[in-house]
Image 1: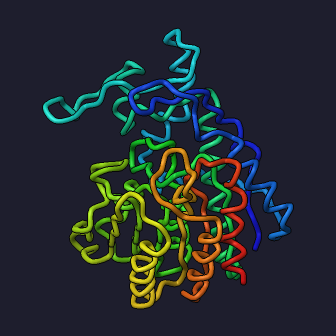
Image 2: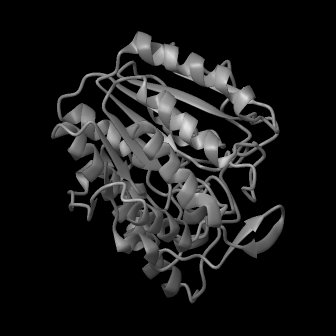
Length: 342
C-alpha cells in the first residue's frame, strides 16, 4: 500500500490549545505525523510518495470560497491587527446574534468561520491544511488509477471541518474533498466510514442530504464527548439523503468487544450499499492510552479493525484523522494498514 505525505504538513505546529477550560500544551502536533511516517518506513508498508498539486476548485467543491480565502489570508490579517502569536476565536454568531451581517474585524471573522475555541491558527496553518487536502486528493487519484488501497497521511486532520468552518483541529475536510473528487471523476457511490473516537460532524453535514455518499460513523456518545451537538443515532439524513447517514454512539469505556457489534452493523450497511470505493476516516484515538479519549482499544485491536475492513472487498482509501498517544500512534496506524493488507 502506498503512503502519501508532504513535509509541508509539519509546518502547522501549534504550541498551545484551549482544553478543559484551560490553556494547555497542544496535542495535534507535527510529531503525530512523524512517528507514523517512521513506522511506515520501518515496517516497510510500501512506497512513500509526495502529493500532487491540485487546483483550488477541488477545495471549492466542498468548502465555501469565502472560507477558503479567509484561511489563505488569515495570517496577513492577523498580523495587520498587531497580533503575533497563534490565534483562538472567542465569540460566535449564535442564537439571538445576527448571522446575516458582514464583519471586517479579524476577531469577528474567526468567530464566523469556527466552531470551537480549541483549534489554534498560525502562520503556516493554511499551507499545511492545503497540503493535507492534496495528500487526500493524491491518494484518491491512486484509487481512480486502479490501486486497491492507499493511505493518505493527512495532518492536520479533517473530519470536523464543515462547509465554512474549522474546529476540532481540522481546517479542510480531507475525507469529503476526496469523496467529492472520486464522484467528480466517475465513481457513482462512495462510502465514508469514520472510526475516529469523535464524531465526524463536518463530514456528516456536508453529505447529509445526498444519496451518493454514504456516511457511517462509530464514535463516543456525543452526550458526553466532543462535538456534543451532532452524532446521535436518530440522525439518518434528510431529503434525498434520508437513510444514507448512520451513527453508532457508544458509551465511554467501550472496548473491542463492545465496539465490534457496531462495526459489524456498519459493514452490513456497506454490503447493502455496494460502494464503488470506501474512504476510512482513520482516527486512532480509540486507543486505551489516548490522552483525550475514553475508549479502550489495545494495539492488537487496530489489526482486527484492518482485517474486518479488508473483508468489505472494495477499493479503500485510508485517511488519517485523530489519535494523540504519540508514542503508540505509528504502531496503531500501521497495524490497521497491515491488517487490511493481510
